[in-house]
Length: 238
Length: 238
DNA sequence: TATTACTGCGAACATCGATCGCAGTAATAG
DNA sequence: CTATTACTGCGATCGATGTTCGCAGTAATA
Image (cartoon, rainbow over the protein chains, first blue to last red):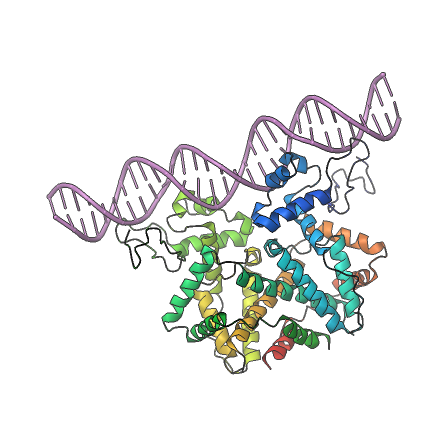
């Protein structure tokens, strides 16, 4: 218990996973690493969704007991931190910037969306105010570099990046919903919708629905992610 | 077990809460209503967050046992449906449309954001492909009416509305995060951020952070929700 | 060599969503 | 009027979850 600064006896400062040392200085070497744990969790989530990522299942995938994981993590939430940052590292940030903020952010967004499509459980991760690890930090720095040529205030830059992420998840969700086979829930919702539309009290919803069904029959022109994003970005950075 | 249509023995079609009749035709009258249950759940969530909305706590607030709730709901998820639609009903849709899609959607967005500020737990509700009850339907119809004057395709209209909702939640989250007193997690994240910025390897992040801190000291010019939204909407509907 | 600080983990706790089955009740059928 | 049927309320209980405690073993330090 190394006190520091104040003499306050209960001054335990909160610390993220990223700051905490990966292993202590004294005892035996840990048998596993955080990266291994994160990898196991990601693998599980990829295969069976985020619900499958319980302390027990992750532990058993690592051939150990649930309690052991708490030597590496304080929380299940920290496990989600690890997973999130792990896949954030999949985005290639070595691509040189062109100098055009709109185009640069565009390719960044496309890469981010690809990650979301590869790891659908990302959409199920509870949105904290911030979930930023080392890789997330790099991502943010890269986005800020892309925005450097603009005249935006720092606040506006952050706002733009946040908005960009919102759009990425939005479109990723749309694409994934169309791809996955409809769940029981989805079928029920759809049935309710067409039923409600049939009552005549929501004519415009009915029309939109009919159109949607028609375009489903056709080879689906693929929602235009890039042009829409470009329009929004042009509007925000100009 | 009234068979209908096919002779398929296991053809139970999935049904939403909204379609299922509120009470059966035979037995005693239910002692509670779905609206009451939803109200109790909303009250609980308003006071102590969505985590407090467990079947047990809701039941005990209604002076009954957890099992009883399952006479009204099939799932906890359906309880979330009820809650969501209940607060969706708080948006005033009687306001006449001006005919200008951008301005009309703007006031709708502002009202929606107010609901989110009043019920912060809305941001914690797991995002399903669709969570649309009667009030949600009315909301959608209203938004489509606002978009009627545009030349957008039906698909684009729905896309625009979805995007609008994403922005609403985005800004609601930003406002709420600034309002609530920082949690342990948030403090840890913030500490990690300034620490990481101090290493010098993320100069732009550091700069944005410094600027953010400075504007926190000042009376905070309030992030410009409306103008930003207007720009995006103009870009999308033109 | 003794102490200290760590690691792995079995056992256990509280809480969660959900199910089962029974007692009671009201509408319907005969 | 009675029997049947279909419903309601709910106690008891199940399996799964996140998390904690404490002990045995281990390696670095004093």
